[in-house]
Image (cartoon, rainbow, N blue to C red; front, top):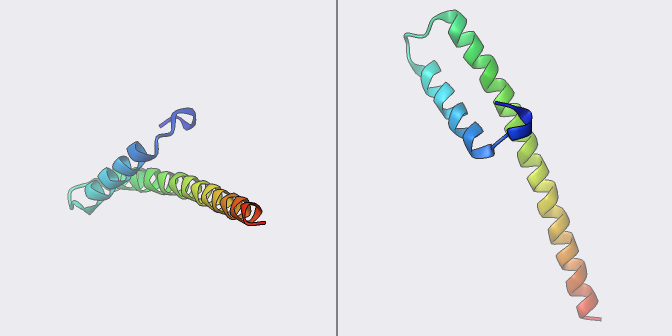
Length: 73
C-alpha cells in the first residue's frame, strides 16, 4: 500500500485479513513472518492516523468552546 494513497478502511480490512491468515495453522513460517511485519506496519500507520484524528477533534472542540464563550460575552 503506497503512503500517498493510504486509505484507513482498506488498511483496516487488510489488517483483519492478515490476522485471519495468521490464525490459520497452515501458513509457512516465512510467509507468516512477512505478514506479521506487514501487520505491524499497518498497525503503526493506523495508530498515527487515529492520533491525528484525535488531535483534530480536540482542536475543533476547543475552538467550538472558545466560540461559545465569545458569544456569551
